[in-house]
Length: 167
Image (cartoon, rainbow, N blue to C red; front, top):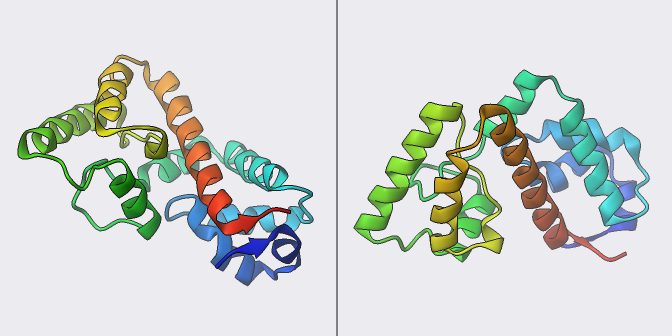
């Protein structure tokens, strides 16, 4: 269901979380913590407030948010939005060789950073995702955590675009 920004601003906290809690993977508390900042004057302002909420979280809670995301190409249970996003990038149609490659790269990534590789798949193909995964394995843990959060913010922005109509 689509909501106008005006209707979003009028929602009680429980409904606000029910409507926007999925923007950050399995972490509805981001919406709950952002709700008191209403009214939002634009979708960009709402998104910015949610990003600020995440940035204000202690390091451990930010890591929990990152770890709430599924491995790309995984067959594990994941949020509906993640399934749709991965499908749009063709990650549901990996060949056995591609699946093995992404599985090995995901394992190497987890071993190096202790959280899953995150990328806004809507902007990518499976080939560009594999290229980015290989490149980002070279990052330092601090750079990669910042990159993962930036990707999460973009994923949330894209999800918000599908929920809130203008204006």
